[in-house]
Image 1 (tube, rainbow, N blue to C red):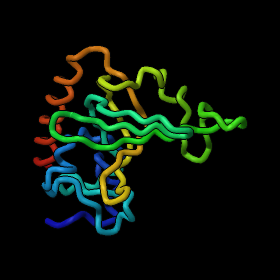
Image 2: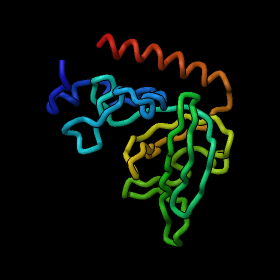
Image 3: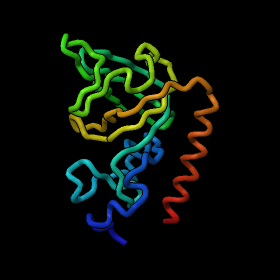
Length: 168
């Protein structure tokens, strides 16, 4: 069976969800996460199923805060991926307010941006994009994990979800 028809994408429950993704599925050379032929870069095929977003969990290993955005590298133990949080700008030109253009303010996450630090365990949701020939996750939601057991639960869920996806 080939890729599903574009007219059928919205019928797949995975299309509107955030499937859990291991970074190795992006950078490991496996054809698990590939751009959909007619997706214009916004839709990918994950194990043959159409998706628009994903969820990852890992440790922040680098952090670069700039005006309007924060760029960090996430390491889940299987690989590393660059993530970007676009911050909305208020009238004074400082980050903070949520924008109608799709950008988000720090308050929209429910997380103090100071909580995002090197070594923090974070769960993120967003869209995968190609930037300068490398995968980059445009973050829509970010949660700092206080309990280290969240990582174990994430991996158990990832295995179960993968089995469910493969089963159809």
